[in-house]
Image (cartoon, rainbow, N blue to C red; front, side):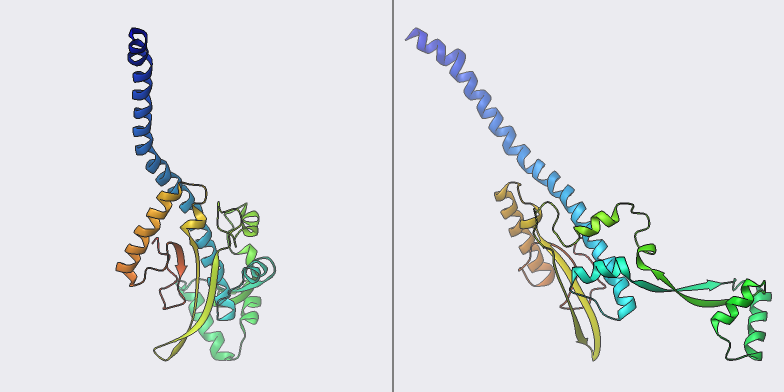
Length: 238
């Protein structure tokens, strides 16, 4: 009995205390790790949704509508051109302004291309001209790895292949037809591999928040734009 008592006092009890302490620490640290991992993954996902928004806005500027196809967005970026309006000369240059007004009075039908030729020959003018510039030379110039990122733009980060949902419509709002789009991903996909119960708890919190804010609780995740009503293509994280 004495030996058993010593084993309990010097071995079993200390191990039990250590185990209990570990469980307490883990119960505190697991939500902390979950929230840290969630924040890191959200940052990547938000950037992807922002990139989609940038491409969609550029696409709409050319075609007057949005697209529901990631392949179309990719092709637009890789193979298409955008009309870019450039101003040549300064509106603060009074001589250039006067020269331009006189030129238009003498030749009301003068084209921007003709004015560009005069400008290149040294005449001081102020005018705008429209150029066609490849989309890939216009967007994301500061992102050296964007071409690699473009390959995965249709997928939810960290999800091992889940697709981002994207849709576009033309909706009549106050008698005016308005092009709309949205792109979204769920926390269920984004947070794959993290503690499932904590993710379920997050879904419940997000749906409750959305019910109060938007009157609907059918979504838990990140979304940019809306096909329900115009929202200036805002993200729900903004």
